[in-house]
Each structure stands twice: as C-alpha cells, then as structure tokens.
Length: 126
Image (cartoon, rainbow, N blue to C red):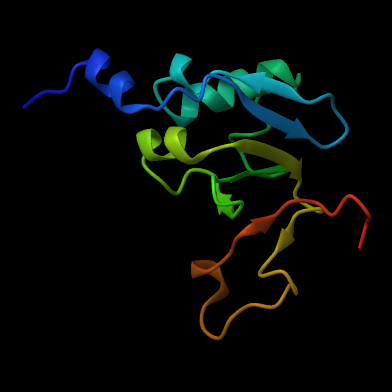
C-alpha cells in the first residue's frame, strides 16, 4: 500500500513552529511540515544560518534536539515522521563545544559509539 503525501502530513502533529538554536546566532523557527526529510531540513538550516555545506559533513557542527519529555536526542536517528512529532527544539553547536556522553560526561560501559548523545551547551559554561 502506497502512502500519499497528504496521509504522511496527517500523521505529523501540528508542531508548526520548532525553534532552532545555533551557537552564536539568533534563534529561528522552522515548520517541519514543509520538509520531506532530514536532508531538506539540513539544507534549509544551512541557508538560514549561512553555513552552506557545513551541516551535512558533520565536521564542524553537530545537530541534536530536545523531545517532548525534555530528553536530548541525536538528530537523524529516528524516522522522519517520528522526529517531527517529537522535536520541540533543535540545537546546532560546534563539534568542539558539544558535550558527548551522559550528564557527567561519562560513557556507560561498552562501546561509546552506540550510546553517544549530544547534550545542549551549558549556558553557564559549567
């Protein structure tokens, strides 16, 4: 059974404005329903923040988001529709400033690459 675009958008809750915060820039908002997936959103964010080509490479910037429960989640790990329903706020920060691991910056036992999550930058620089 083929899903139509209208059916896909009917599944997305009415989160018309999702805030996007980028380190060193003014906060913006985006309407996730305008995009068909992560690539389109990344291209738009690169235009908005004038960093063309820098988000796709993951060399300089990291993207993560806060869900409805206040949890920090890795951007791109969830199916697009699920992401649209969960994302309350999107963060873009420099790779160097992204804190990786849990709140104490410690990895759980095991392979850290399978449990890596990005935490929002601490506004108090702690």
